[in-house]
Amino acid sequence: MVSARSSLPPDIAHARLFPPLGLLLREIRCDETVIDLLTRVPVTFHQADNRHTIILVQTTSNKKSRTFMDFEKVSMAMDGVCTMFEKRLKEMYPHMKDITYDIADLYNYVDALADLSAMVYEPKINAYLPYNKEWVKKKAFAHLKRQAGQ
Image 1 (cartoon, one colour):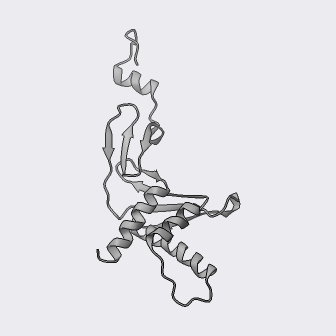
Image 2 (cartoon, helix red, strand yellow; image 1 turned 60 degrees about the vertical axis):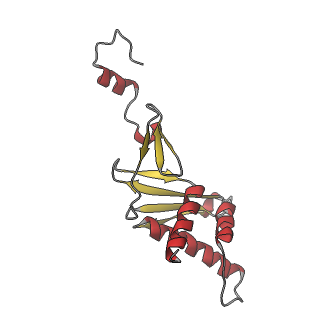
Image 3 (spheres, helix red, strand yellow; image 1 turned 120 degrees about the vertical axis):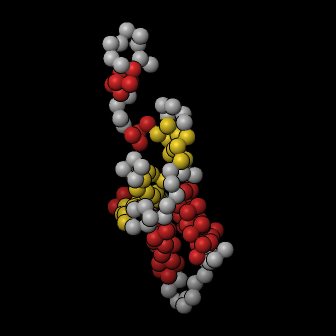
């Protein structure tokens, strides 16, 4: 806290003690709610699909397997994650013409990846917010459900 002897106005003194570190002072939750660690006030960001999304993936424990995929929308990124899984299924079962899977199979694939995360652009703060595997699984499920018309 600011000392009573400070000659600076409280908002300027506060800025000196806590420089504008933005995301470093925030705790990201997978339900799109951000808790400001200074004020402990929840802030919810909009759920628009038209947010630029970067998927970061590491398929094995080897750091050389790290790569990224760049998408214009969250829904396109979820298509990309599903396509990545479908390509892996085709590699595993090249003799099968039609391959079907359920959401549990997709979840197992995501969980087996060494790392998977998403960086989603948030225009309110002009920055990318990080999201983990659980968020990706939740969004992929919702996306597939919408595609199926349910």
